[in-house]
Image (cartoon, rainbow, N blue to C red):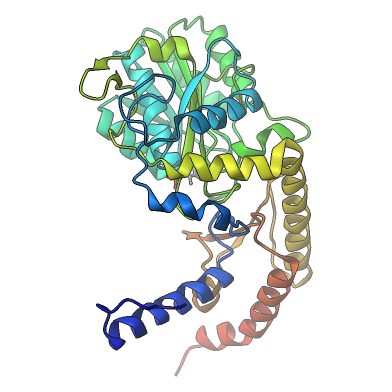
Length: 386
Ligand SMILES: *Cc1c(COP(=O)(O)O)cnc(C)c1O
C-alpha cells in the first residue's frame, strides 16, 4: 500500500501497512464465516468521491439528488423477481445487512398486527431475538429438529394454543450453524389448517436466499410459497466490501405504514434516515456481472466444494455432514488452534465451514493437513499428567 499523506508519521504509516497485511492474511484463511471475497469494484472507485446518501424511500422522489435510488430500485426488482413476488405488489430497499432486513420484516408485521405473537425456532439467528426485543412483540421459541429445521409439530401445537392471536412466523431459509431450511409452504398450510387468518410469514433468508431459486429440489421460501417478506444479506453470497442487505416486502403492506416527511420531501419508510448509497451501486454492479445464470453457476461451484469438503473430512474420520443441497459442512468442534487459524464459527459442540464462493478446494486440502497434524496435539492434551 502506498501512503503519501504528509500528516501521517512514519509510525502511523507503519501501523496502517501492518493492519492491511494482517487483514489480508486473516482474509485468506477465513472459511468459517459466510462472506464472498471474489469481488472487484475498482471501476466503481470514482463514486467514492461523492457523499452519496439514499435517504428516503427508493421508490419515491426526494429533494436530495446525490443518490443511487434508481439502481437501488433495480436491485430490489431483481430480487423481487427472483423471489417470485407479484410484479404489481412488491417493495423493498437496500439495508445495512440481514439484521436490518429482519428488523424491517418484523416491524412491518407488528404494524399490521399490533397484537401479534412471533414464533421462531431455537436455531434462529441472534438478530431476531434482539429485533423482537426492540419491537417489544411477545414471542414463543419453537423446538428445532436435529438438522436445525423447525419442528412443525411443535409449531402447530403452539399455534393451536394461541389461535386467538395473530401469528407472525419467522421462517429460516438457511440457519446460521447448519443451513437448515424451514418449509414456508408447510408453515402456510399449518396456519390454514388452524384457520388463523391474521398471519404473517417473514423469511430470514440472509444466508441462503441469494441462491434459493437454484436449489433443486426446491425448498419453499418465497412469495409464491407464502412469504410476506424476505430478507437477505448482500455481503455473504454476492460479496461487498461494506456489509449490506436487501429486504423485499409487499408494497400493499408498506403503504399501510408509510408516512410523509416534508424535510426530505419523501416517505420515511426505511429504518434508518440517512442510508448508504454506495451499497446499492456495488450490488447493482455485482448483479450485472453475474446475472441470474452467473448466480446459478456460483451456487453450483459452492455445492461442489461443499461436497468435496464433506468427503475429505469423512475420509480422515471426522463425521461431517450437510443438510440437503447446503453449502455449509457441519462437524464436531475441532481443536482451538484450528478454529482460530481458519476462523471456524463454533457453537457449543459443533463447528462449520461455509463453502461460499471464495472457499477453494486448496483451502480445504490445507485445512485437512492441519487437522491431521493436530490429532497428536489433541491426544497429548487430554492425557492425565500424573
Ligand atoms: C448473517 C445472518 C443474519 C444477519 O445478517 P447480517 O447481514 O450479518 O446482519 C441473519 N440471519 C441469518 C440466518 C444469517 O446467516
